[in-house]
Length: 299
Length: 313
Image (cartoon, chains in turn green, orange):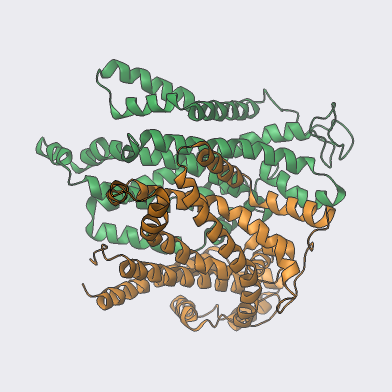
């Protein structure tokens, strides 16, 4: 999915610009980086699995009983069966959908809140800045686990509650960074030039300043994505996770009763699947930082 | 600006944040979470019983008085009694702090020392195979959820191989040592990845500074530069990072403590969440917020003391 985005991005840039822009330079750096290419590809595969399971082309029969209860891994059942005799492979595939949707929604929500609050705080300064800084200082003083519990308590259990709880608690870091960068940028000459030709606040902020801090948002997006996937495990352990469909979190949580009976394959399969995508997103985040952060250019 | 004036102003800023924290906690527990009498009395309570309990808990008073009580408890640490065990929460906290600290302090100590020395070593070979390999291991360790480590460690090392105690705790030195070995190992596994990554960035930020080039130009060896010059300058972010983690040590580790039966603050919090024990959850939230705010102030002040370049404005 992100593969496609960055590709289309590059082609439009070739048409528009002859000289090497920062973005084109970044994109070329990214393509030269083998780890980044492999990571992008892997994330693409996970996204594809998530889409295929969401539309019922893959693992649609995850709920079907395919064999006896707690069958250990064999050639017939690659990762064994769970307590109800359901295939662990199918459940893991179906869990990809939940994990990717949680990652995406959390990353989007935290980016939207963080960029909005951070940029208006940094740009306008004064009272607005003070209020927003007070708000995020207050908010970040409360342990996020308590906020997570409280939010899921309000919204009830379920996937939407998980989306909102993780998204609403993960914007502070980005907000701080964006505020700092906007403060650094707002008195630069190009912003003064923009106001000289009659650009309003909105135009200066979103058309001129924001593209210059966008790399922070992109790096943060890939990091927040994987943090959310891991956080789902904790929510499942607290009994506040996804209900009615398999998720990696609930599969790992099930293992606390299964392991005593020697049933390790649900834990193994879910951890392995999660390890793959979280590792990839971490590596991708590092590669994106190397490619996009102007401070690291030439190092 | 004078350091004392700065400290005073920084402390003044604590007040609005603390009031805000209390406001959020008040809204969460008293407005949003609904009537706790349902939880305490069950579904078949009569209206009279509920009214009596509400009076007993002070829920029928003006909202502002209830909010003030909350603010007061942030200073006096008088949080009332737990709903499920009827114990005084302040004594639960003072009893729970010790088991938590016996787990977190050794873990934190070992992890920090290993991470700082490894970060110097890795920076020495920066860009090389050793550097890349170490970073890959760090990221891999960080990519496995904490619950999986705990479940696997407890099942495989404690239960299957019998190398450690499966769960439990014993007060007093040295009785607790067998019980904390595996939890401490798991703590280190969980924290060394992010720590080492952070310290590596800190050291690498310094390695490209001009003073390093000067030191190299005057003929100093790489090792001397790294351990004498770079480490000294890197100490500022390192100390900041260490201090800001201290409040979390007191609060313990939620999952590790509850799985290994360590009667610390993390386990208490998790039990309170599971049994909807509002006063305990509220107390732990206030306690961690207060600790977080205070150590934030200490970090800021330390920063200005340690680094004369930081201008106080």
